[in-house]
Image (cartoon, rainbow, N blue to C red; front, side, top):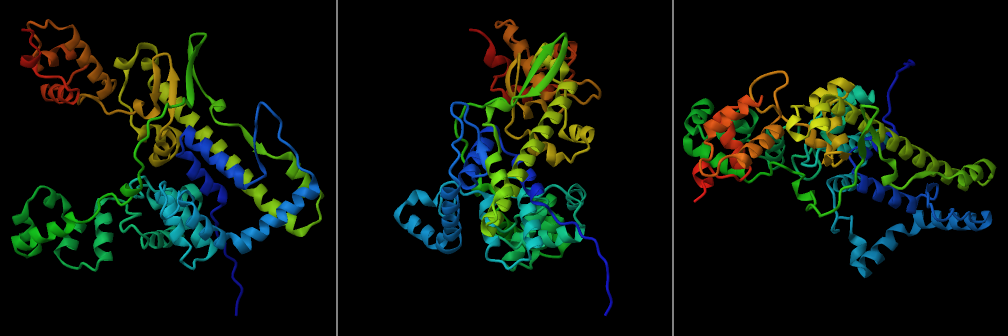
Length: 451
């Protein structure tokens, strides 16, 4: 026998909350906080109209013991009764109307006997998934961000990929299809095709595929039928139908003394804090059960508050880079929008691109030009040039303006529009003009000619 000293990094609950809250919109964060406050009395959602009522200590202790008894003894049976009597009680569960990929995967973990740290790592990866079920952030990057050993994350990913729906946790389409084929026990040509030859299959180069794999064209066609039955986006079934809602600005751009600044609008979500009353109660009470319960709830509240602060900070930092790179837009309007990739913002902030993607998801910025989703400011270059080439969004705006002011008796052809755009500092090809025009639903010159 010998003693060995090892050092391990455990994933903290703060990191889990940080990943989860970063991608929430303002409305989703508001709902999240209010729901959490219903089950955690330590979280105080401030009401500007009336101050929170402080319960008597004895009444609270009695209620606390009742809650703990129900949590440990009656929760399961109470849930069954609720679901039998009230179909709305199933909302958010397996048969609910608002099932999400995260909740569906998390509930499957309940059936697995995992060590606490393994479960926590799988939950971390679940919260890093994109809406379509892919895990596009490389494990090495997640390992670096969370200071988690890479082998531990690889073990957690292997566990995640055993869950339903098949293909979840894949890094790309090829791996997603491969995981699904392995789940159904496929070992034939279809597996070899999705691993190494998807590009040939997409271009329908059946003879080249048959030659490379040493099989017949008929076998390639049969493999194609098998692959077409797979789900390329395993998380798609959980993506909710977009509901009409009025977006709320998360940020606002203002000009002060000739200088553009951006600030966060924190007032759009309810302010919340950790209750001072329960902090004092924890310090004063000698009841062991009360101390354990309050310690757990206080830790949860503090972690959520920290994660909400991290969310706001990351969002503001992303907006500051956008403001710096797109300053002409905020002064001159959409036609001055420059191409900007999320990778550039990520590099400037020393973050991963997926972190920036989650941070700007469904976030809105208010400026003199109007209310825009933050993702609006990320666009590819319209032309093939480098430097200050206009973005595709700006090019479309310029194209619409040129068509709007043209002589309707002699409308401009695509080639003429191409030349006019070049003179305006937006050099694009005639084919690009035609593509943009079709995307905008604008007919060709013959269809625009006044009769």
